[in-house]
Image 1 (cartoon, rainbow, N blue to C red):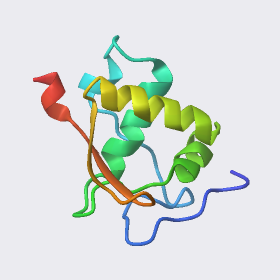
Image 2 (cartoon, one colour):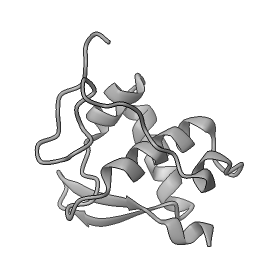
Image 3 (cartoon, rainbow, N blue to C red):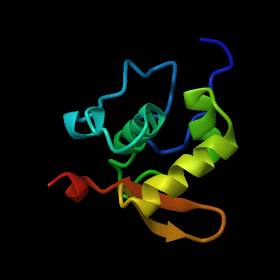
Length: 106
């Protein structure tokens, strides 16, 4: 893989070189209420939200991982938040902490 995204410090699932795959819960994988790209993004967030800081990946990092634009990520995140798929627990205008709302699937 060329042009790998930069690492996110202190996060266990951040190095594309070390990444063996992304686990996607079946609830996300088969959710027909969101697009395939939104399911993929939700899977990235789900895999990155395991630490105490939850997922704090930037739009740039997520765009690089998904090989898309930051504007595309921004739009998907906005829709996922509006639909209740992600919770943002902290936002200071620069850094956000977000997690997948798995209660949405119960």
